Length: 206
Image (cartoon, rainbow, N blue to C red; front, side, top):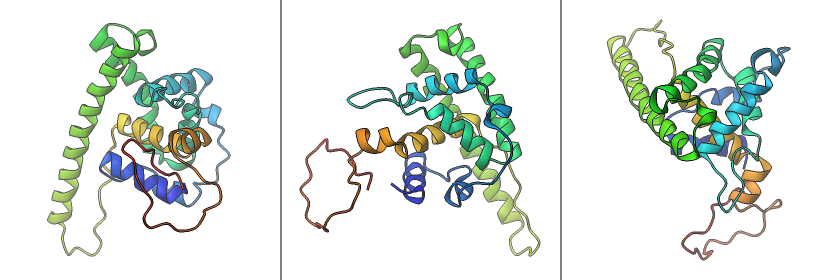
């Protein structure tokens, strides 16, 4: 699965544009900043646990097995604006705060079921936040319709939307995600326009 296809699938699943997509498609930016300047090992381990709650091990390995936490760290460093980087980094603490508020403990101290409940609540929160954000953008565009020098305001994104998008993107572009969770053929074969489908078949990575 190439980058453009992966982003298209994540956008379809999330119902909106993928944050940082334009940079990811073009190869992201060249930077001398080290991942460790933004994220330490504990951050990456935490993100792996969050990602593994979103995509746990089932009949195929989960997101932690694909080290999606490290993928997130690289993507945030190379493909996010400084504003989105700040939002994402602050979001790590906010996610832990949400876990304490809902279940009384830090996210890593919760049971798998409790972790899922926390992330389900955050997903509802980010959907409402994003819907309100999009309404404001539509209203602003309408208010400035026909204005030649109009510049769309850069409204903030929700941190959990970033986490969820990067989890899906990182997993399904990883070797594990492409070969274990999806069906994969390294070299495309002949075209078959009438390939039989059985209910429950995995989607194709290629």
